[in-house]
Amino acid sequence: MARSRAGIPDMKYIRQEVPINEVAQALGLRIRGRNLTHCWRIENHKNGDRTPSLSFHKNRAKCFVCDLHPLSTLDLVSLHENCGLDEAAKWFRGRWYVPEIPPNTKLRRPERWRQERAGVGDAFWDSLVRTGFWASLDDAGRAVLVALRTFIDPHTNEACISYRGLCRYAGKASRTTLARTLSYFERIGLLKVIRTREGAVRKVSRYRLNPDNERFQQQLHQTHKRLVAGRDLERLSLAASPYKGDPKPAGLPKSSTMSSVVDRGESPRFAAMNRSNEFSSTQSDRSSMMDRSDGDCRGLGQDISARWATRGSSPFRGGNLTR
Image (cartoon, rainbow, N blue to C red; front, top):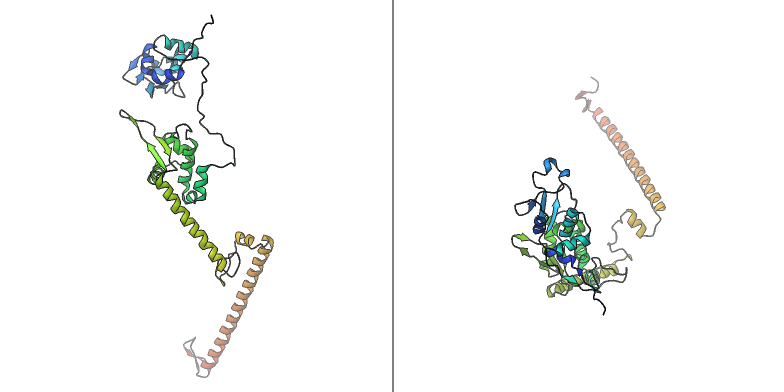
């Protein structure tokens, strides 16, 4: 008769369900208070870790001197006993109830990043772009929406991410800006924020995108109506303009920037030559005007001198010319 194989211990259950402070007590660590204990690696501490430096948080442990990252219950036992995961799992099974995963069970972990072909398109993004809603958002709104959509779990349709993580991946360091953007998405019905508490501790919020929400669909409809109205108005102004492709009224000078030069189909080299010629002609016009004004002033001075000479006095000297 064939012998049935035993299952493997559920590592996820050990990490999440076994209290880490009880694990520390079973390892013989000195517990101080509820969330502090002395580190067993006393060679890394001054005075033998007289002040506890190993703390517990969210069923994880971390020494602020020895550890770079938080330790799970399995990691703590593996480091303390200097063994592998198999020996650590046996250590747990000898002290706590640990369920087993049946043999031949396919262990499937949901992918964090969704793999899609580039250029195929997504109905979510298509609706935002084609209705003009994407163009109506500011930089913070676009960045936060992309980050939320990236971290959405396809099975639960929710993104579980902290405020700091959302600021980091969206590229927005201001928590005020992030709060304002999330509040706007909630107000229009696109986003639903699920806030939970575990006693006095607030857990990480979960975010759910609701593109089929009635309020959000009305927002998309109004935004698309404004987009179509602006597009039709622009087409009418272009059709009524005397110059094709130039909606400006006749008689207004065109801009001399490089973009306007390229739009008119001219070469930048010849445009630069034209601007230099215009500058030269302007300078010559200014010189001729100054010459004419100087000549006029000299003629006016001679006329005034001759007129006062007949009277025998000069207005410039305040007396008689023959004095």
